[in-house]
Amino acid sequence: MIGDATSTALHAALSGLAQRQRVTADNIANIQTPGFLAGRVDFESSLRGALRNGDSPTVNGGTTARSLEPTNTNGNNVNLDQETVIATETGLRYQLALNALDGKYNVLRSSLRTQ
Amino acid sequence: MSVFDTLGISASGLMVNRKWMDAVSDNMSNLNTVNPYEDEPFRERLIVAQAVDYGSGSGGVRVARAEFGGDPEGRIVYEPDHPLANEEGYVRYPDIDMGDQMVQLMMAQRGYQANLAVVERATNAYQAALRLGKG
Image 1 (cartoon, chains in turn yellow, red):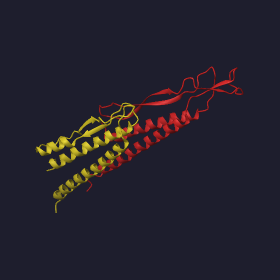
Image 2 (cartoon, rainbow over the protein chains, first blue to last red):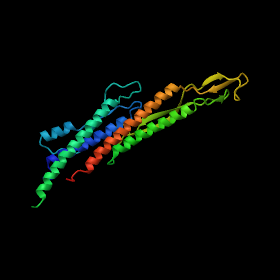
Image 3 (cartoon, chains in turn orange, yellow):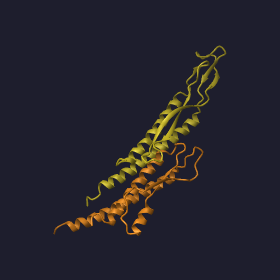
Image 4 (cartoon, rainbow over the protein chains, first blue to last red):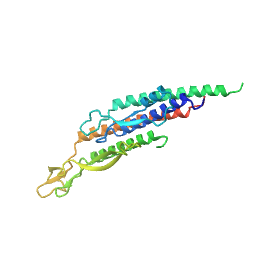
């Protein structure tokens, strides 16, 4: 009940989103670094796959790949507009997952409360 | 991997951009530094950024080294009244372009602001996470 698929899936999502936030911070910190390729985090596909198969999702923060978009003359392909959009979206998704987890805990708390 | 990694990564970005601004202000303040004809001129300072643990996870950026830019010969100017002038009346000025330095300053400033924006976003997310389960 406490460690069921809902909370594990939300935990996996929070972990993946935190990793994406970290990688986005890394991308923005390296916006002028020669030869730096932007990192991209994917955790959704493995999470979706696990949930579809009825398995318990693994909380691993997802996988980080390097973006293959065209680079500018110093070999860097970080795009500030794109990173800002990703950072904002990741922040909102993080809040959403937190709210869902909070709701889950509220249900648990109500059920544990003795009348 | 620590809990508040994002803040550390952004802090490294802030530091690199601040050092870049330091280098630019050094260059700008020495724009009119005169050296004798026989000596080297003041050389433009350039900051070389390098990714920390690129691709291996922890992330961040640091200043790998500072390099000299501009023409090593500098600009040779005819100023016979200058106390440092040689017998032919020449002195050496650094080869630093004011417009180029201003552009670099703006780039460093915007980079600093972008990293600060990430700090703010990360703080919001962490604060929300700390409120989790409070009901």
